[in-house]
Image 1 (cartoon, rainbow, N blue to C red):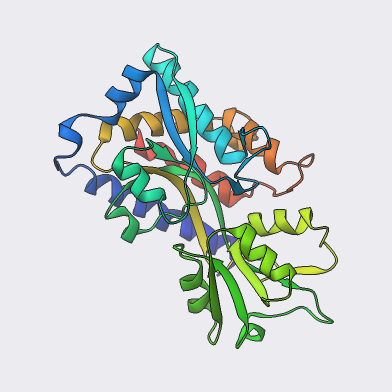
Image 2: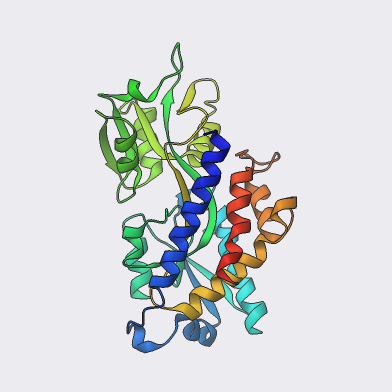
Length: 303
């Protein structure tokens, strides 16, 4: 099986996962007094959005306290889309969440959704719902470059930094044995320990590690392992409250509309994507055919 065929097969596997999630979400369970989160959003005219404060190129807070990043722009697009469909201005209101509290923040109603570095899993779907996927990448490990390219089995016995309460350590452990992990509250602190020589490497979503390598000027001194592929392809989606089909369907409608034209690299989603990952961006990350297929295939949700 070629790499492309493998990717195509995974597209269908991932779509099957999302269809299964949609079926589970149809089970009527009482929550939030049987009212939709959408009613409160319309009433206050604000969409409460949770995001990380130091996770570029997906999200970050600048010195003026403004949020910026790819998933921040996706969330703003969702708020604008709500307003266009509802006929009332819906303003995005951002607040900081962490890898530890992102799910509880949605469940408690402190935020309406969280868009960012969250991988969709069936285990997580037992407690929350998810939007359509808006990004696809996979886990890799950033290491210091040596005389030769490192392979996965070279990591045995090495100390690797990961962000706590994520799926990263489990993914690396399944790919290679003998790795020891140290948990950090965020990627910034893991990278600081790596720069200080306390870690052999840092594991995370490949595109975020590529961005860190670029920021540190490490194109010649740091390598990504594996070099040309990810340990496991992962789809990222927004965390949504469970058992709220009205809210989820409106989020998905906005996302689906933004995916229109993605095969020609045009449309709202493509514009945001290339703003952050295009040839003129700091983190160049070409949109693959696999990525395009996943976005295009999301139409099954609305048919």
